[in-house]
Length: 379
Image (cartoon, rainbow, N blue to C red; front, side, top):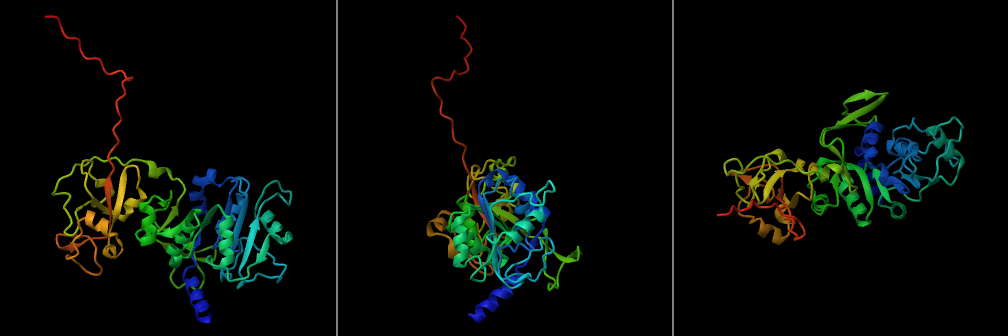
């Protein structure tokens, strides 16, 4: 147990990337109607430093939340100046103690005419039902955190990068709505990609693959700059994931290019053609196409069907019927793994294998008035 706790502690330090409040607000404003009368669970968030907790506490009434729950994993080395709390249990900030905060209302307690963090601070300090210590270490996988998850409607947080796949799998298992921060490298991980294929996850509105800044602990050696006395690191591969509706994933891509064998060569080991960018998807090719993984940010399941992915682990993970449909040739191997797309004897980057959905024909009904034909002249 001691070795496991030490491993978890080391992993936790490497996973401490704290999302900026402006980035949270920029993304979450798009989902406001979905939060009304809902229980929101921030299950990787210490209120001392979590801007997710801060955002929902400030917007509790405007979002019409039913309840806000936040739990943390054994405290954190970052001092929380934004929301200084006082624990009746210890009279000081318990840096290494896991606890939970549950809020079911936020009022203007100080009578200044506005609901702000001062009111939240007052609520937590004066209502013993709001804040309590957890029995365990606050790990999102712990039994008591799972019970809180069962109570929640929507999970919003920045989970540990190293445990992202496990975190998403847990949300999927308990059928929870979510808006979470992640890394584009996980787009093609087996668990996450399967959810994309089944339209149970999608990218969010903002910051896809453009890079984001995060606060990091003072112990981090590598960082981008100092802001307000805190180290800030840039993660170039960050993005939002959700299973709530996102408008752009209902938009149809305008396809204007036409297929030619020269511009769209076929892979050596798949019955599919290569497409260098989603902008070049041909409008008249009905077969399977391999597109860059960034296509998933534009994916509209009404326009395209995801068949599978072409990557180093395709042969190990893809169902037999999928491999047969793609006419995968296991005898062509390039580099590590078996399944990376090979083009003219050279491996290419991982590709998402897609196919255009055929537009459904609208059946003619007799009640419709056809365009009248020109009357024949009398001979």
